[in-house]
Length: 109
Length: 114
Image 1 (cartoon, each protein chain N blue to C red):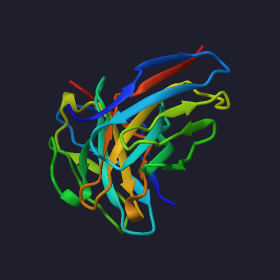
Image 2: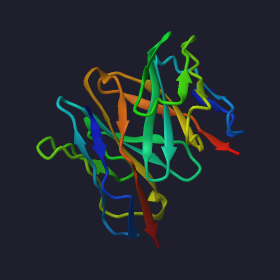
Image 3: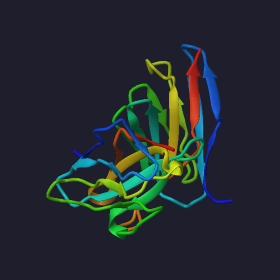
């Protein structure tokens, strides 16, 4: 079975502060990990995938297989980063895409 | 305009009625999924289909039914057996390919039982 855990329902920070949204996963094989974002009144959309090793909107995420984690980080939060963030996992055969419960990020001025 | 379209945006249902939510995509993806989004619950998988004329139950399939007669369409029926149907429903068309896997979501349907 595959499982994604996001321990924080809400993360509130001030503008310019560092941000880390936590994600842990459970999967016996080699997963693909993703972060999706849902801005207010917009569709849920892909933010980044671990395999790309890219930085999107200043966010990065490193897959740590030893700790089974895929935390999302940004050194300096901006107000426009306020959104709902979902960590997701795709497993063997890419049969399903499993999401965590999401973390709401609020960035205050 | 390519993408995935859900309709209607808002839907009201009387108790005891079945309702069908529409989901159409023109992205030529084989896989389509239905999720339910509730506050504090994240996205929970209802049903998914990897190919035409085939579909699988997700984690919370009870009280729901689907069909996949065409590649472009994956309608979801919320039956009267669903005990708590009021929710936001999201349909996704998914490209399943190593290194390129990505879900494309519709704008959602908010179902309210009155």
